[in-house]
Length: 113
Image 1 (cartoon, rainbow, N blue to C red):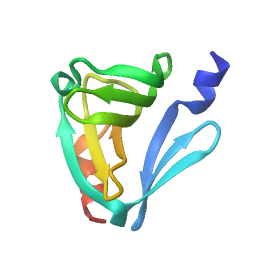
Image 2: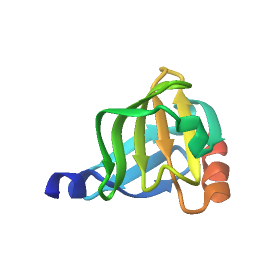
Image 3: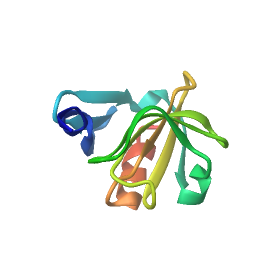
Image 4: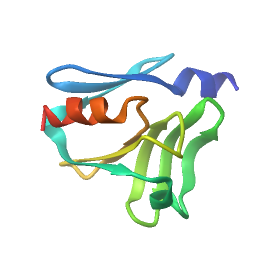
């Protein structure tokens, strides 16, 4: 329980060049100019998803998941039901987020792409 608490995504912040995923221990930084594709997903897009190395529900969802549609995705969400944002980097690495304010989050990300 302690491990899941320290790694769950607490909030997302953006500045002019980066997206940050803040956790109790550390943060993850994604350069906006590395983003290749952004799209909003529904929970139906995650049908058949499974955890490869992840936490599935306690304090949210985070870690590596696999989906039929997108393959491996690094997930940092509070929910897998709504406000889902899929991000693919130029390197091929993929992320899933669930910001509270979906439209504002998308606008902030797209300003850097």
